Amino acid sequence: MENGVELMALPININELINGKTVEWERIELRKGWNPERTIKTITAFANDFNNWGGGYIIIGIEEEDGKVSLPPVGLKINQIDKIQKELNQLCRKIIPNYFPIVEPVEFQDKEILILWCPGGSVRPYKCPDSLCKHPNYFYYLRKYSSTVKPTNDEERELISMSNIVPFDDRVNHFYDVSDFDLSAIKIFLNKVGSELEQDVPKISINELSRKMNIAEGSDEYLLPKNVGLLFFAKEPQKVFPSAKIEIVTFDDEAGSSYTENIFTGNLFQQLTNALSYLKNQIIIEKVVKIEGIAEADRFYNYPYIALEEALCNAVYHRGYDNDSTIEVRIYPSHIDIISFPGPLPPLSKEKLKNNIFDVRKYRNRRIGEFLKELHLTEGRATGIPTITRELKKNGSPEAVFETDDDRNYFKISFKINSDFISNSKKFQIAVQVDVYANFFLISNLDDVLFGLDSFREQTTVQVREQVKEQVELTKINKLLNILRTCIVPQTRKSILNLLNLINHTENYKKNILILIKAQMLERIIPDKPRSPKQKYRTTKKGKMLLEVIGE
Image (cartoon, rainbow, N blue to C red):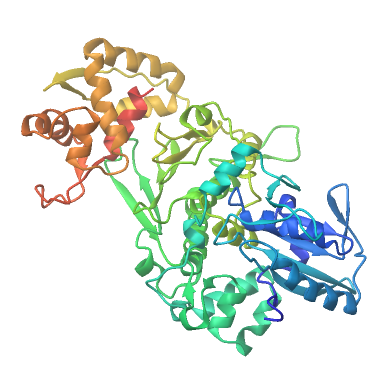
């Protein structure tokens, strides 16, 4: 550290940063020269990180033209860089509370430039003077698209309400130490992203390396790892986060009566790349159709790989790592579901997802997204859904279905198989038989219904729902379906009965919970101890499929 400002190689590929390949343009501010008044406002805005985008970068010595980088760089003189660094130290002391970016002088295309890395701060909100005169006024600043602006009254209230709230992935973990980092995993990452910091690894301590990568925080005597560092670089990631894994389950039929399961563990980079490799090599099937009179054959796939890749990376990016549920990939003969927990943050809602409305939104994890983009495992912010849509259309596949519940407990993306991979030699006919049993219903040929629904949805959906609803009292359906929806995330007996406005009584338990267990729609998470005080109930695969048949 020099004069309060840290000088170091950045854990990112500088060439890709400057060309906007790994960081979105909204998070990069290009400056031809040094403008201290404008710079302090932008540093403050990045530190406030209002949308949890991960802060941003100020690059001095490169001109901007129409919002893009103009090369070759203008560059800075060495004495200018020294002067800026000294002035920057005094400037950042004017930010309340004090905030110091991470600084790297870089030689780029034979010119000297200066890069200021401004990660989201851990003690926001931050404010700074609106001018560098003697008695300035102090204001908060935010980033809106590519501009630094003062917040509206509503935005200022929301920013203040975020006081000291740090996203889970960027928080320090008090139960582990920087010695729990795997140095080889860090070197692999730096090598993969092409960071010059890799060359410094043998020369510096793990403490210094952790600081340079911003994966640890605290005093020298009490330096603690951040959760993002443990997720990507822990020696034993699942010891720290037991549920941080990807489960791929391949079902032999639509009912899920038999299946094979593959569980991918390790750090986030390992498990994600291994799971994607499995999907690409074991699940994706290419079909080549030779068209008479045309030299080039028509090639398409049961599922476009890039769409699945983006969806799975999206699940890794946006899931809650303080949640005890894994990421699930369920592969059926007719479709693939990718499910993560919990669901999206506002303003996204069940209705917006149903209508394919994806607002610009706040992010649950600001650092995980940065690492995934640097590894080229995901595209920029807000580009995932358009990428999925584009690749499905290019492959001639049906549109993806995006789903959550009213309480945003989960997020599911469903992909239907390309219709050319389904045999159309025989029209599929189904008959639905509905029985009333102990105030509930069982669909005796559920397997056939589900297959028909998935393969010929438009022909069967209305028929199935109408037959069910004609023979079963609507209030009972809605009550019990509500339990199944709620128990996507495991619930206690008391919370389930509270949902129905019922007292925690044995008879209510039998009529509303036990009946679902007997119908194999609900299951105990501790099956061998049904009376355990820690007992919770969750919706089974059969229950989830039933929701698809007669749900809204």
